[in-house]
Amino acid sequence: MWPPIRGSECRVEERRKPSNPRTHPALPIPPRAATPSSEPAGSSSESSGRAGAGDRAEASAMALAFDEFGRPFIILREQEKKSRLQGLDAQKANIAAGKAVARILRTSLGPKGMDKMLQSPDGDVTITNDGATILEQMDVDNQIAKLMVELSRSQDYEIGDGTTGVVVMAGALLEQAEKLLERGIHPIRIAEGYELASRIAFDHLEHISQKFEFSDTNIEPLVQTCMTTLSSKIVNRCKVGGKLEDTELVYGIIVDKDMSHPQMPKRIEDAKIAILTCPFEPPKPKTKHKVDIDTVEKFQMLREQEQKYFDEMVQKCKNVGATLVICQWGFDDEANHLLMHRNLPAVRWVGGVELELIAIATGGRIVPRFQELSPEKLGKAGIVREKSFGTTKDRMLYIEQCANSRAVTIFIRGGNKMMIEETKRSLHDALCVARNLIRNKSIVYGGGSAEISCSVAVEAAADRYPGVEQYAIRSFADALDAIPLALAENSGLSPIDTLTAVKSQQVKESNPHCGIDCNDVGTNDMKEQDVFESLIGKQQQILLATQVVKMILKIDDVISPSDF
Image 1 (cartoon, rainbow, N blue to C red):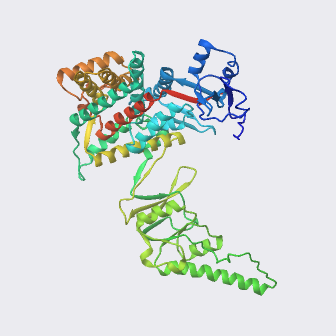
Image 2 (image 1 turned 90 degrees about the horizontal axis):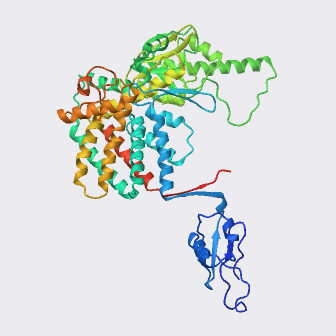
């Protein structure tokens, strides 16, 4: 006996009666296959008496399954809860979602790009023009739009800069693909054409790149590059209350703590630091316990015992030669008072991450028990000083001239929290660019010059491909122009006039360094303006944007839950 079919899972409809009903008594019909259909559930109930042309049309629209007696039936599983887009409609809907995200970021591109203000559900406000941050903070619902967010994040993780440009580039490629789809070109052929064009652009970037010369003694070129990266960020133009200039580079570690006792010395030279994760307090049993004190003598004895513990702990630190104690845990007033009297400055409640940084910078070891303290486990620093800021008496601890001289801290000051957060993001981008240049010394010039040069090269190469891919390659060349167009538009220039003038100048002079003069310096030569980017960053932009666009173009069916 076949198991009965539940009505909630599927609806079964018999299409044709068996030739001899007596031979086959009423058996439940087993389902062979469950295929989601594009028609709503109601269509199956009204089709039982139809025949001829209408019957055949409906059967072709729905997937048929057959039982072992050859009787056809249709299964619709929760079809009323699904919405479905197929073919060109699905591709156009996906492209529209991708373009919408790119349109948001387009105005943030370049040194004159606008900032976005984003408010989180808890009311926190972020003001930024960093592409990855904008998309990270946006509440994106569409799945294709989420792909664009992932695209920006990939660029941020891999390169650290160019997060806005990569999304604008992907949006331009999708826009061009839409025109080709309307002309009847198959999406797979478009994807193949884009792949060929991206390889041409990738190789051309290698060809026009130049080696960037710097050395340990001459790091000025690296500083210039970081300034190019920072030029598009808020740091370049917004200095609230003159506080941003107070940002400093500290050769050491800064801890957001102060000395545990106000009378402890505020400056210690040639400090030997004991880094402890054990508390300054008498040991306690791990199990539940109760201490009964019924006489004054017992209380006195307990107090003396506790004082003895504290004495021993402080003495152990003094014996190994420590001149500063940094402790992960707190200690009570008695221990604090004793440390001050013994002339042993201390800092308490220092976080685990900060302890690790201090240990790395000073060359010390983190000590979990007082018994394990030894002179070789102490960290060494030239100066440890406490510094106070403003009228609020905010105090911080500077640990400088450390044994490990490579440990440095950038201490950022700013007029408000949003300012500081944006400055942090800008410095992160600049440091990533410097890191990329140290890994690979090749650079290409900025201001859209690399994209214009690639566009010209891809356009010229399109003639070598005889197939339909030629259309896609030309469209890729047009999409590359989106970056310089956006730069010109955001700088208040006439986009098309500026782009055509620069492109013709590049072709006439065979000079791939001509770009958009966003800062109105008076020359289009980006080499003279010292505006350049790392080669691997630009190549990564083109590859990532092409990969995402290919993925979006290959989706031709979107089945999603309906909105109720």
